[in-house]
Structure formats: structure tokens, C-alpha cells
Amino acid sequence: MKINNLYTPSHIEERISQLYIKKGILTPCDLSIENILTKFNFFVMEGDLSLAIADFGGIMLPRGLSKDKYIEKFHHELIHLLFHSGNQKEMHSLTLQKQEQDAQNYLLFTCIPYHMLDYIDFENENIIETISDQFNVPKNIAKNRIRKIKNQLLINCPEQLSLRMM
Ligand SMILES: [Zn+2]
Image (cartoon, rainbow, N blue to C red; front, side, top):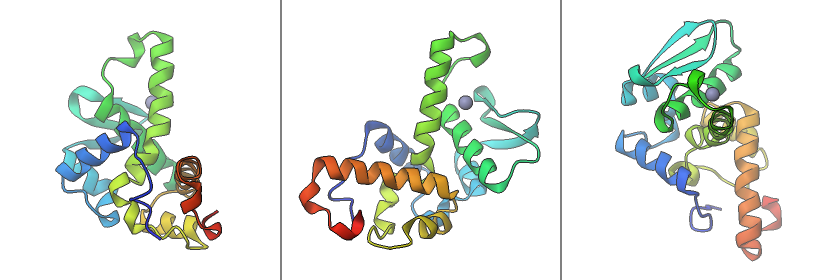
């Protein structure tokens, strides 16, 4: 079962997909960190902390992260690069808090973008493991993304949902 006809993306999901499509990031195979960096002309460097350096298109990630944490932090900082401006060190704490929440929520959409949802079989019994492999993302990210999609479908079109999907 494909869900792109049933699911309504949020504004931010659409924006991320537009940016990706413009850069030729079209299928799950295009989602490697190396490819995203190349397409956007961004770079990653190792440092002591996790940080987006907006003016230079740079992402600093701490040394010694697990693979899953590396991917999550990368996408978190990618959201800052794509959507946020201003120096967080000089920012009002509420603005900073909002940016941090947004980055943490929106990374689901850079990891598993709206325009690639048709690659997902929502009736697959091992959907989390499958997506985690297919999109090369941590299982908790795959799980959160699918849960949010299913919640929206449940509200918008419950009659369309087969029991197997739940
Ligand atoms: Zn952040």
C-alpha cells in the first residue's frame, strides 16, 4: 500500500522535499551523508561539540559518536543550516529553544523525506527494520517517522487504513 495519495505533508516537509529535489536527491540511495554534503556543497568537520556554522555551510560533529548518533546529529545540524539563521550563542533562550526543538522534529523529514514515502511498503511487518536499512537511518528515527505518519492518517482518513497497517 502506497500512502502518498492519503498523506498530507506539512509545510516544512514540502520545503525539505523541494530543496532535495532541486539538488537531485530523489531516491533513498541518494541519502548518504556524503551525497547530501556534495549536493548542498556543505562539509563536516570533527570537533569537541555539535554545531552548525551557517556562514560557511559547515557542520561540526563531536569525535567518537556511534553511527546512529552521528547520523542523527548530522541531520539535526543540517536542519539548522537549511532553515535557521543567527548565532545561537547570542540568541534569546526561547528562540534558541524553538530552533532546537524544530531541528529535532524536522530531522525526521531530512532522513525520510516526503517525496520518498512511496518507496515504503506500509504493510510490511518489519517496516522499521526495512526502512532503517533502506534509508540508512537509526531505528528510533524510522520508528518516530512512521508513527507520526500513521497518526496523521488515522486522524485524516481512518476508513482508508487497513488493520494490518496499525
Ligand atoms: Zn541544534
